[in-house]
Amino acid sequence: MKKVLGLVAAISACAAQATASVFIDIKSQVPSIETEIRYFGDDNFVGERIDGYLAPKCLVSPAAAMGVAKAQQALGEFGLGLKVFDCYRPQPAVDHFVRWAKILEDTRHKAKFYPDVPKSELFQRGYIAERSGHSRGSTLDVTVIDLITKEELDMGSGWDYFSPVSWPSYQAISANQRANRMLLTSVMSKCWVHGNYRGVVAFHAFK
Image (cartoon, rainbow, N blue to C red; front, side, top):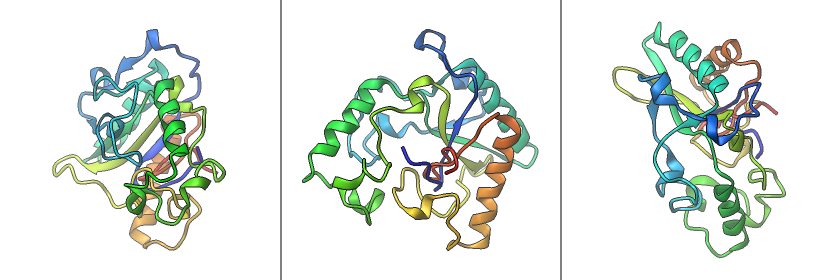
């Protein structure tokens, strides 16, 4: 999936050849983290719960959990914290995306998630892929929030927003939005060996 920036950051931890048997619930390691697993509900580009998501939990590899804990601690010193939208993504979920992409007439959520991209080109442009780093439990979609109000910092685009606006190199956003992206990038780069942006930000890996 193309690394886009938006309001959620997707981060790739190094070491992630973990299997499902060793995944852990991030809340058990980082109790203060906020989670809103969007693919467990219908607030996503498909518009329905995605196959393979059996509970609204963020499952990650032990290495990823350590990185998240460090980032949460660093942000906490400023009254900020992380909010997670997606973590481990089972292969049935990826397969669900592939099936959905072939149904070209289903564009229920186009206006919110991919307004300027023809659905038929989502694969071609790299916004959807048949393989995902999320399936290794080492990639997360996250953003930054105020720990008191729980409000998300404005990153200039929303989660899973398929557009150049979400790309890390995009400059036509406000100075405050660029600063928020830089904050997230800085914190993650210190806590992860490899980090990227993707969407609401999509803080997936940079590209």
